[in-house]
Length: 452
Image (cartoon, rainbow, N blue to C red; front, side, top):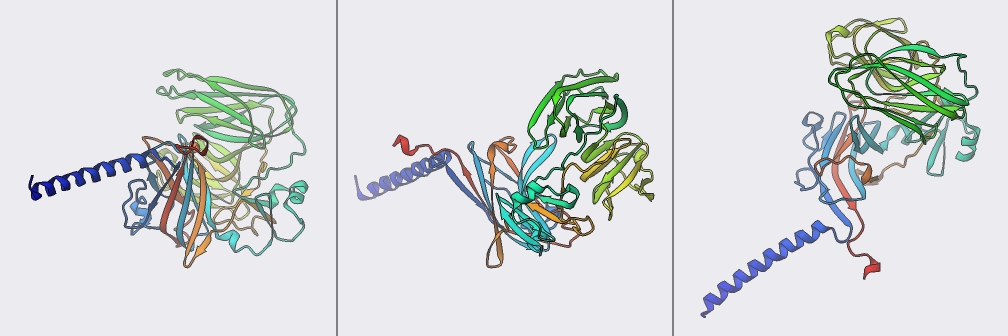
């Protein structure tokens, strides 16, 4: 064998060894033997695991967010238990920026955590920290957060951010006998109400579209979010006759409860029969007919999807015209409360707050949630309670580090969806520049110390 042949054989062997080593390395990485996998996205650089920011209409030059929300998809190649995200960004005027993952697809919901809250960072009130919480006080009154929580000021004087604060229930005013309240609502809703000691008895009447066969689910939880009871009601496709369901829960104790109506859009709720007086719908109403509603929300929007809904709407006596199907009309209330009168046709009412259809008595079961445009003075807020830590800085960049339970992220076809939320970013003429997205996905190591 001559030298040239030997050289060719050696070269071929080297190439084969390199290929085998490469594929072995790829396989080893795919197994994630250490239990930790790190992937990074930067503007202008391709990543096999993190896609680019979308949609193009809300993202300028591939990395600057100018509309709300913006999102991207991530592609885990194994099951992971934890997602740690490190976001490097520059905030050009957005009051609140949050980041999180899709937690459910129907209805679509996200687990959002703060990147930066400039409303809190610039708030000059007295500041107290403890137990993972921060309390801002307009006038210092409580030395510790524990003292504040024991005293429990009225909830209409408190705003929260990434924290909970519930109202104190003085008296549960129940009717002597059940009353039927006409609702004219469609699909999923959530309510909070004040119940007394003893039996909770609810009767709900509804009809369904002919094509619907999805079940109804009612979930009851207490003031702290602890599950109390649930019921699933099986429906038959094609049965469009009016139906009733009962939801009876014995031995409740007096307090504030939350009832989630997990229903498809094919369900139309006609009425609710109960002895309840204090009832508030949370953040959303989807109406199918005339309704009068006491609104307790600093701002909300109205939208209809069909021409039938293009009629004037009254809020606190002021007429507002719906001009185009599918276009939301924003409504602001300097006082925070007002009477909303809706006519025929479908209408969606959306905005963080509480909505009490007549004749229910409105009440505020929770503290006001701090939003990008919240005016603390106009809302009469004296205290802000939050779970929040400002981002760190690295020169001109800010860095936020967040952690998510991967089991609570919705995964479809090996894909997670993550979103950047900057409410009112257009109205603030603001933008958020993303310099880097670093993700560390964790699971148990392939070889633990104990197995060595």
